[in-house]
Image (cartoon, rainbow over all chains, first blue to last red; front, side, top):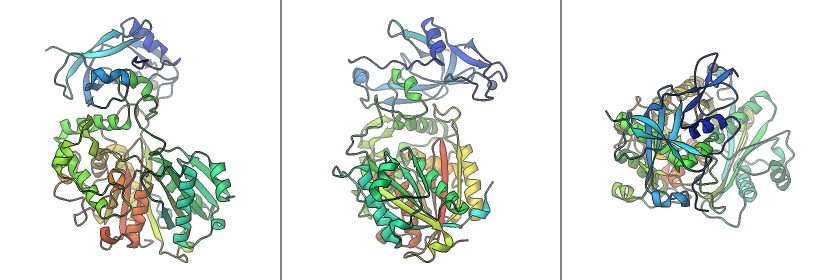
Amino acid sequence: MNTKPLPRITPDSKPFWDACKAHRLMLPTCLDCAKPHLPPGPVCPFCFSDALRWREASGRGIISTWTVVHQPWFAAFKDDLPYNVVQIELEEGPRLTASIIGAEALRVGLAVRVTFEDVSDSITLPRFRLEIE
Amino acid sequence: MPNKSLAGKVAVAGVGTTRYGRLPEYDPYDLGIWALKEALADCGLKIADIDGVILNRIPDYQRFCELAGLNPSYTTITPGHGRFSGICIQTAVALIATGMAKTVALVYGNNGRSAGDQYGGATDIYGSGGPGLWFPYGMTSPGAFHALMAKRHMEQYGTTSDQLGQVAMAFRRHAALNPQAVMRDPFTLADYHASRFVCEPLHLLDYCLINDGGVAMILTNAKRAKNLAKPPVYIRGFGQTAKFTGSTFPPDDYWAAPMKKVARSAYGMAGAKPADMDALMIYDNFTPTVMFCLEGFGFCKTGESGPFVENGRLQLGGEFPTNTSGGHLSESYMQGWALNVEAVRQVRGECGARQVKDANLVQYMTAAPVITSMIYGKEAK
Ligand SMILES: [Zn+2]
């Protein structure tokens, strides 16, 4: 039972997770106001339009903020302590909670790029790496 | 826009609090009824005088009212999220101002300590469905959410851990003067730094307590309040707004834009400005929210709350004594309710060793996806 929690997939978010499985980052995008948004929902939260289409994101963004977790909130994360959690602001605007792989020092504003980790047969998580200048 | 016609029309007539701490022999109903009994005794009203009931965190309104023998003209119940204390108080003002109810009891009961509440991990429901997205990364808890905000503020403006520690130390000093407070032993900045990280940059001493207790407030119209046992404490101004869009993630502006809107409403109604406040009650779920409120409500400039809280400015005797009870960090985690009661007791001059001299105007503020503020005053205008 010491498995890490998986995302709760809803009808609205299923296309997002299906795309991750194909190692693509897709965003629900409004055909009326052109803005992409997260989390996925039945309408555009900026203009209430239900004319939405999934569009592929560049996978690039910046760290808008970050923390290092020291508390064993989940038994399955105990061996990872302390571990980072970051908030990524994607180039297209929407934000994602994720983690950074293979970085020692994190800082607000650092450029990152998405990478995908297949954590189970059905779930792939987006994570990020620092862009190498 | 400020609704000046409501300024000073409603007053707090009675307040009541239970003991705080670990009270396993009481459930939330018992705690709520205990607090309500105290609030009725405080203002000299009888249970039959209550014709409006607003409950918070208590699980069921029917059971509560059945146990208390209440058959009000208006009943509602709200979830146990701290932002609802301000929402409930403002709803009571509206009910009284429109005549839908004459005397409203607001009752809160919290057995979180005895029930083993954790606010993190698999049962965490904080945020708008965020946990479904966060958990795979080990992200959970309101504390982690506020740690994200604090980290950004530190990198953006140079805010330091020492400055967060100053906030926690000030409130603990106040708690030392409050016999009702759960945590009363003062600590040093070294103790603060030695307390373990929960989510960096936040230490354990940046976090609020988890404890049991109950709070009740009785509000009525200003005219009726004048004839009761205690002098009325008038609700001079208030404001509320929400920032739900994008609220799965911490706001980049630390809620400054919505807070400015609330500030305009509250100060506009009260005909006052930040510098006029004699004491502040700021919803301190974590130390950074105190900083964010000081900036958002205009006590200091954007990004300058770090230096602002230094040199004892928030301590008794300082420019803006804040959370004179010890707040959520050191008195008791009553989700805003006990801070509103402390505001009332300060205005009445009932606070003993921690009394602010001539506390005529005291402001309550909260920073969250729903922002509320109330300004309490000794005079109606
Ligand atoms: Zn749109």
